[in-house]
Image 1 (cartoon, rainbow, N blue to C red):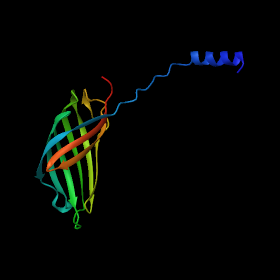
Image 2 (cartoon, one colour):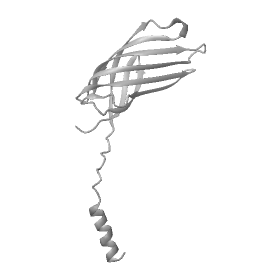
Image 3 (cartoon, helix red, strand yellow):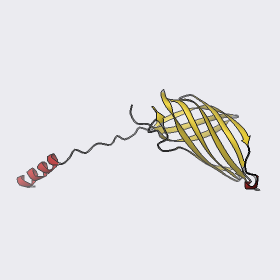
Length: 155
C-alpha cells in the first residue's frame, strides 16, 4: 500500500462516526425448586379442553410467585396430550427485583415430552427489564425443579 493510500484510509477511518459497540449479554443459569397449585376452572364445554389456574412459588435464585392460566387437551391415545400456558412472575432473580411473563408450550407424543418455556420478549419489569431466557422443568420424586438459562442487561 502506498503512503498516500495509507493516509487516505487513515483519514477516512478518523472521519467516520464512531460505531457503538453492542454489549454481548452474558448467559446466566439458575436452578431451584417450585411448588405449584393447579385449580380446575370452567371451560367451554363444546371445546373439549381443560382449563386451570396456576399458582407457583419459586425458591432458590428465583425467589418469586406466579399466577397464570393453562389450557390442556388429551387425545384418545394414552400418553398423548398438549398444553399451553401463560404466567406472570413477580419477585427476585439473583437479587434483582421485578417481574416477567413466561409462555409455555408442551406436547406429549405417546409419552415422549417436548416442552418449551420462554420469557415473553420485553415483558421484564423493574430490575428485570430486558430479561430474555428459557426455562426447563424437572419432576424428580414428586418434587418440581426449574433450570433457567437467561440474560439480563448490565445494571
